[in-house]
Image (cartoon, rainbow, N blue to C red; front, side, top):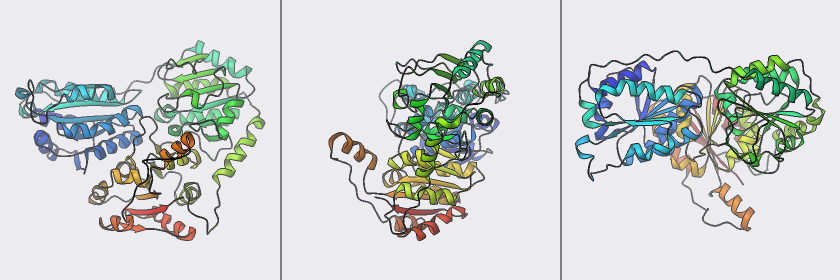
Length: 525
């Protein structure tokens, strides 16, 4: 077989279902090898959209999503989605084409050093300059991408190497070994700290969801009445309907969850990724004792100095910690008032004639969605509200990018989620993020996807305006104009709605249960 055939066969062996990408001259051999394989190539409208699809696929399934581009501009278009996966700890394997090796030693059409360009946004990346290394490189790319902490890897396949023959065969995916066991001494220290604490609190991060520690975490909370706050990407690890859930910490100095952290005399941080929230954004007093539970040691940070670090498999650590402290019982009186305030802020019942706001729309959206349905949020002011006010009941059902936090993820991410899960999917986005990758609506219709796109429109880069107003008392460079979103959606053959009353909004959001793709435009003030 050729190197391209071998790469396609390796993707089959890894269990890859889809490769999201854009065709080009330099990846032609691989495209035809994919055509003859069991892997489905999904041609997208922009490489960034393909990378976001692979990113969200990895986030939702835990298996590496795969994206493909050609050389030069195709590879650089891919870069943003690859970086997003890398900082969000989502497993992703990127494959890029390249010109023939014989022309890469001098300046050449569309040729740049892609491997060097991808260096800072991948765990590992390499040029496949010999057909006989393809099988090893693919296996390594998937192994490193999916190993805790997950992230992005990259393979570059020059067009002349792709056509060369090889007698190598795909390597089997070795069974993943159990994660490392926590130190008994570290567990004992954590147990002692909890025994001495009067107001301990658990901070749940992305790692608790990613490593499937949530079942043990729920057992811990149920047994001890420990309150829980989550980061944006830790939502759903503990059901927000649980009276011990204090929802999410905000990126600022207000909110009930922040107040809970201020009151706490011990914080047990489970799977906390520092790329998501700087410690000084949620830890009011750096002197508060911290227990760091994660697969990697704590980042060196002036405001995050743990009393003890339990560096081991997060799920295994949570299980063994629960076994040690399940007889502990903590008084819920110190946070019950905060839970009540949070519940009141979430249960917004806006007047029928009131202008739409994101806060007022979310209760209706939650009402329309089953607990297992998936919400993919774009980045913008609406993301902050979704992260803080959208109750999430199951892990990996509220997908928020808060590591790299790139706009434009929702529409393509909704496609990947729709392909990956059995439940319904909603892509929630602002008008700015929507138009960044709106062309992927054509991809969605071609794939016969059935998900809902909710577009909050304010004709503005709203979050930036808010920050400018807060710092300067005015805003500049943020106002925009928009097309007719109803007409735009219908040009793709998509049913679209622009509700004007709360009753019409509830009716429009009921389309979440439909098997067809729909778009709901919600003007917000």
